[in-house]
Amino acid sequence: MPFTVTGRLICADAAEAALVRDLLPEHVRLTREEPGCEMFEVEELPGTTIWEVRERFADRAAFEAHQARTRDSEWGRRTAAIRREMTTDEA
Image (cartoon, rainbow, N blue to C red):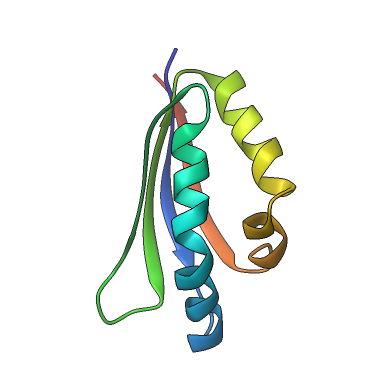
């Protein structure tokens, strides 16, 4: 059953936004290579420090594996304090 995540990554200031811009390309690349990742898009909203996030994984297990990999990654460690507003759905 597909597992989707939608939401926003909300940077508090320009420094957090710069960090996201720096680390995001590698995070996206690694995520898209994960087994079970069907779609992973993160798009900066023009004129803001907010990114829209859309993710789809084959199932909850694939999403949980993604979460585990992310926690141990440079992205996970360095962006942990950035606010996230996410919702999930198992279709």
